[in-house]
Image (cartoon, rainbow, N blue to C red; front, top):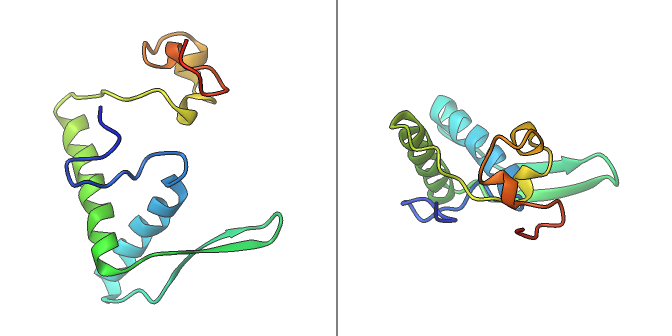
Length: 110
């Protein structure tokens, strides 16, 4: 599976996953209220705040990526790529996932 969706958005990589969650929540809020002023990730340790882009074009791309993922899953397309998401996955640890079998916690394919 490509690292981006057909919409050109790559929401599920380990570096963008928290931002895309904020963006999906912001999109839901915008649908309910019409506007979203800002988005933030707050890390309690060490007390760091990271601003997240919640502009209309970014929210639309996040929604398009979510729609793409749901459509793929709905059609039976469960393809994925090995990556940091595999680190804590029980399917990889249980050796049931062919993709996850090729991932080592350092990120190297074996």
